[in-house]
Image (cartoon, rainbow, N blue to C red; front, top):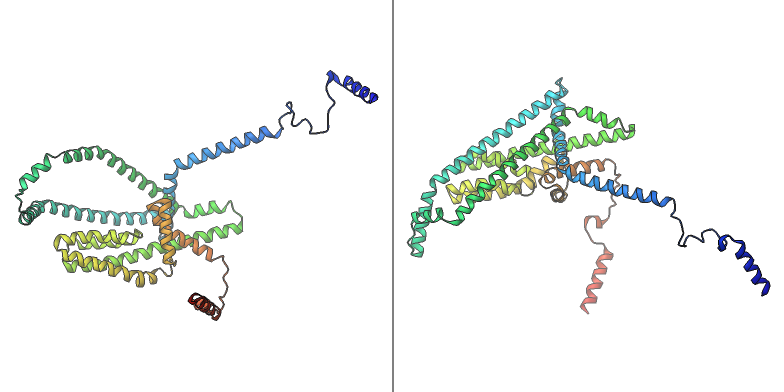
Length: 403
């Protein structure tokens, strides 16, 4: 034991400052004097940089959401008018001039429609205001007769003019004029933005495709051009098929309204055709509400006839007209179309509802060009028929339950 103690003392004295000799590699990692690994500061800087870039990208995306939605709308509008522009350009006309003529014709039709609609609504509002005193007198006479009261129109008018409700309504309306003006100016600015982007997308379509294909290899270029062509066909086909159905619907409702003697029948027919076709899901009900209201001012039975005709025509369109017109353009299942409209509305609101069907039709056609399909075996279960084994199993379950 003595020699061992002496050797230990000698080793301790030989080490500098009386410290213990170094141990095996990695023994000092857990000690209080351990050094930070060289890679850790770089990793921390890289992680902080990635977080900062993500936060900056998220902030920029939320700030530019409105612009991105306008660009998306413009792209689909350019795809919709691409067939007409290409047809005019193929006959020697410059694409810029062809795009301008298409936009000018669309603008003239839209302005004419809203002018006729505005004049119709203004005429109906003036008619309702002029006939309101007589209508109020008839209501007051009916109340006095059935409830044995002594109401007078003068008392009701004075009560309304001096009521707190009317005063608050006028104040709120006056303060809301600025908000409405701001919304109108913002809407006009968005329309101008969409129109400019759509014009440039349509007029410079070949240049845009050439710039996009210039950064891709030849194999990818063919796929991009094929996808672009499918998108043009489906979007243009959707627009033109909807326009044809709007024309048929407008003519049918015009004939009914003209036969009933409802005023402004041509404008109402155009209203029903456009709104019912270009506003998904609820467009039919919004389209039929206005002619029903105007028909009700003439005769309540006329409003009922309009309602019946709208319902019957909608069934005819869903089961006869629409499958024949859209079978070669946007041939998608009705459940898929309905689900795409709901999904588009949840993502982008009314804009998503409008572009959902052509977008899904384009995706379906593009996937159908690359997905390989096989012949289905001749199995009764494919047609929904039960086999003997399943029928026997069901019979055994029934016998067990009968016990």
